[in-house]
Length: 138
Image (cartoon, rainbow, N blue to C red; front, side, top):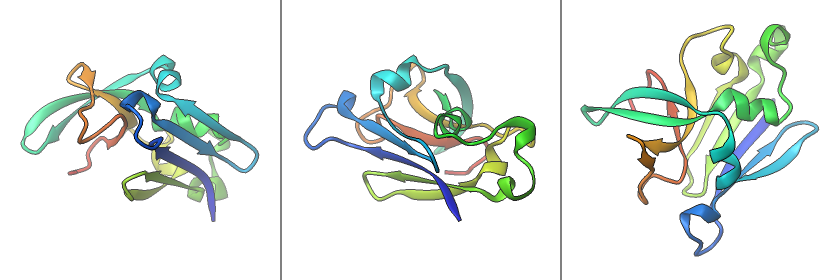
């Protein structure tokens, strides 16, 4: 059963800064602007991107799901481990991950909603947000 939804959507014909992120949980709905996301704590992830090492910076996906009302830490056990998170973008990209996959008390891989690459805002072909999961091939 889907419990949490993260949707990145562009406002029509708007600049990159006009992008928004909708967070929906069972009891929480909120919209974050690019400025809101930039103000949240960021972490870095270094990955291989098309054969070269690339540094991404962004908000941990776990932090965004917490803002949508998801339990965290020791509260993530039993049925909570299989709670699903649908991440959807304005270009039709969609991916589903479980709460257990992104809970740092259970694993080491970082899942980040990146807004910067190599110290600069993401380019037009990628941004303003990009989901980066450490260890994924693409």
